[in-house]
Image (cartoon, rainbow, N blue to C red; front, top):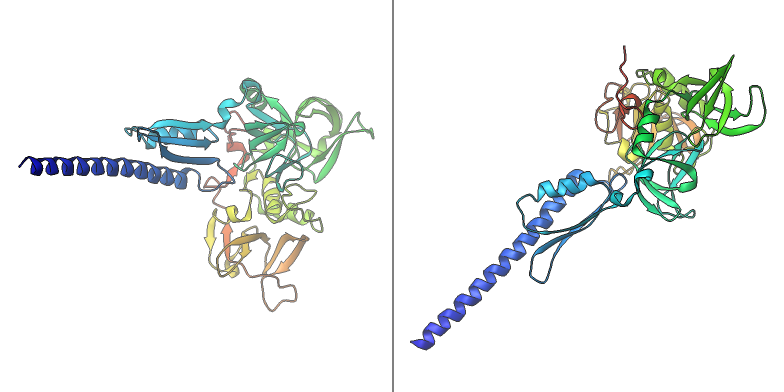
Length: 391
C-alpha cells in the first residue's frame, strides 16, 4: 500500500511539473506570437521601422522580452499589447540615447546622400535635399541614423546636416522660409554676383534674411547667407497651400528628360525611378513613399492602363511573383515617362516601336491625398508647427 501511494505521489509530481513546464512554454510562445502580430501591424517594413524584438526566459523561467526598437511610441505599443502579462522588459529604445540638442536635424547641403549602413562605401539608400527635416534615431560615430519625412530610415553623415533641439525645431517650423521652385540655381554672395555660396535644386528650403529689388537674401540651415533672384523661389507657406496640379507634376518630370539614373537618387540632378515620381509630386507639395514597391501599396487601383489618367503611377516588375521593381508616370495615349538608364518616354502599347514593359498595377494619386503613404507637405508636422489652411 505504501509503495502504491509512493508511486501515485511521484506520478502526481511528474504530471504537475510537466503541466507547469507546458504553461511556461505556452506563455513564452504566446508572447512571441503577440510580438509577431504587433510587428506585422506596427513595423511590417524594415525600410521605415526599426524593430528587432524577441522573447526568452530567465533562470526562473520568467519570460524576458528583449531587443531594439527605434522610437518610444513603439515601446509603448509593446507595453499595451502585453498589458496584464508577467514578463521582464529589456527592450531598448534607440532614440532614448540621443542628446536633447541632437533630436532633430536639417539637411544643410543642396543634396545629401543617405546610405544603408554608416560608411561612405555602403549602398545608397536615398537622398534628401536642403531644408529637409530629419528625426535622429541613433548616433554612430560620425554618422546619424535618421528618419525622413516619408518615414524612410537610413544613415547620413553628420557633416551633411545641422542639429536642432526641440525648441529650435519648433522655431524653424514657425519661421518665414522660402522654397526653390526652379529646376536648379545658385545662392551667390551678392546680387548679380558670381561667387557661389551653395548650389540649389528644386525643393530646397531656406530662411529669409532680407530683400533687395529682384533679389532675396536667404540663409541655409547652417547659417550661410547668399542671394538668389526672387523669381527662383516662393514663400514656403504660400507654396504649401497649392492643391494637386497634374500639369505641374508632368512638367517637372518632363523637365528632367535625359538626366542620368542613380540608384537612390531623389533630386532634379539625378534620380532613380521612384525618385523621379517623388520629385515630380513634391514640386506640387505632395510627399510620396520612397521606393516603387512602397508607392505601389498606395493610391486608388486602376485595373487597365487604357483607363489611366495623367500622372497615375505605373508599376512594373515580375509578373509571376508580383514583385514591383520599377515605376513610371503615365502621360496620355499609352505613353509614360520613367527613369531607366535615363529619364525617357516609352509606350505601353505592345504594337508601338517605343513599347517597353507592361504594368503589373496602376495607382491613382489624384483624389487620394491624405490616405496612407500620400501626404501634403502642409499637413506634415515636421514642416509646419500646425497645418496650413487652404482657402
